[in-house]
Length: 249
Length: 310
Image (tube, rainbow over all chains, first blue to last red; front, side, top):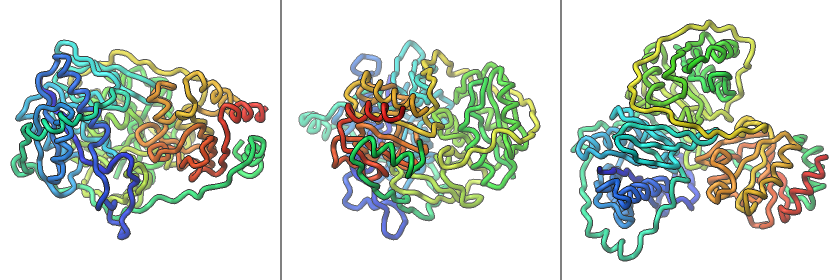
């Protein structure tokens, strides 16, 4: 079985996003970019399935500008076998990404697609579910455990009340939550090896998908700022302030 | 114009998150209906009909909806979508699971986690862990949303008199099934609905030490939360996590204990009315958003706080 892992290039997890002065978006000039953390977990899960003999090949795919090659090389350095870049400079919405990924799935016929549950830039949390809808496949979102068993996959999901386990017919979509695994670091020899692994570059036109956005961003603003308050000296003072000043207890 | 709200429930009771979504739907200016998809869920349908402002309640009572599997519920919403301009659900794990599947089947965008309705096609939603608020305009004729509950007041649970109608189940594709659930049972209030939340972070040191926080929570009638670091370390289960990718809370009082205040955690609690931080590191970023900061060893301060609340 092949496993397809879509990966997204996003602002690094440790960088605080700044709104552009003209309120058109986020300032990404000279900002460190990395693989979306949930996608690293997706790559790791696919690799573990390959290492356990449950999968034969792990294919990473990314959609975005040519710099996404770096993100794909990271996936290859972690251990993915080959990569596909669908080059597109405009911002693509989750529905467009899902349509492009469906086209890749139609070509590659993976048994499992593992995606991050959300990207930490637009926080949409949509692509996996949309891809599942377009393919007519079942979806195991927010996974904390993924167990292959014959022609099914059992996915334990992190839900609001605790954990829930569902059984899905294969092929299926899985989206990762934080506790699924701890992604490995790419070692230097593997980074060197990754440079020789195949990376196909395609365009949106190759798949005939309309990338016209459905949403227009009119304005991006900083949220209302919270002012730092006061430092109290003791628990006694804290309780007194909460009672008398804030009136919340 | 009409909007359809997907109710969240456990086949017995309507989840309070649904009430906030009704308010968001009313803000859109259209008639508001509620869909209750469940199994043996008649009481939920009756409760939904009493919600103030609701025109009618559609009840799809079928074994296929005993657990809200996206593969079964999404086609049901799609089968009803012809009569509606807006389809909404709370931005809970259930809503986030189902609604993008609905949007893709309808070939429309989903607008995730809206916090404000600015007009019939214009909405505000947080991006980049809430470090920016985007005002977006949709060109889709039919719109699909998840709604951040803390951003909208709850509609009154009583006072409405909506009609209750039965609707047939949609074809179940039969590609997924529920196996089991391991749900936390607690006498404390639900995290996203509590008026006071006390959360612990990595500084707690162990799961056992959360007993200190729980003792304070019980005195205050508060819910208990945790930072991602505390959940990743195995101190507390995943459903306690407050943050960008966990639960979003906005209580009257949020007490952060041993939490440094990473941007991902702040994204989940910075809309709380009053924030208290207890941390021994005076440089911790949590103090920059706290109304009241106490620089102290939590293992002394928290038991002291519990005593002071007698």
